[in-house]
Length: 250
Image (tube, rainbow, N blue to C red; front, top):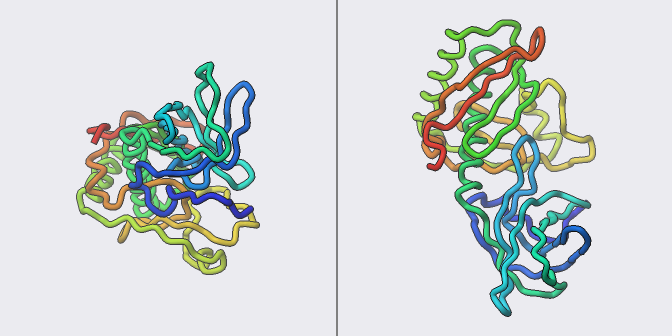
């Protein structure tokens, strides 16, 4: 479904705030807002949704956005209950991200792509799962065996790639063109539904190119370094690597 509102997180991950108008307000146990434009990322692909504030222009009143999600193609903002009346349809508001959290997620997500790129390049292992929080994350790979020496070498290779200051580029391609790219899908299972005709890709130039919907920094130098905090077996050919950013706050 084509959304009616502008979803700016996909085109400019560095936008922190935007003025918008409320187009839908559903009240109940929580208030769910749809705006005509937003900078919030709704979560997906292992990346949590953004948090932040909605501030009404007419009186300066603010509401905490505790989560966002996709529904019917729109980005829906879930407000923290505060006992008062919620924003109304037609209200002009300012949307403010919790920027420190978003930036930490952008850096973490890019670090995980660098990890994936190194593991694919050096070991040909597919991704079988992943998740992240601000400053830390984990990825599961199709490895039969894993050791401390192997993990140490992967950590060193990832940090070398991050220090190489590689540009991170976003593109949106027609489905046929995107799927003509070798190894675009690095997951064991293709998670892209057949009905999606435009595929968003993230490229770490010279290292990694994947289909991805999340937010990322513009250059790997913004990530800093990672530290592998642990590894474990999740099955016969499924091994998990946990990482954290050495400087999680940037």
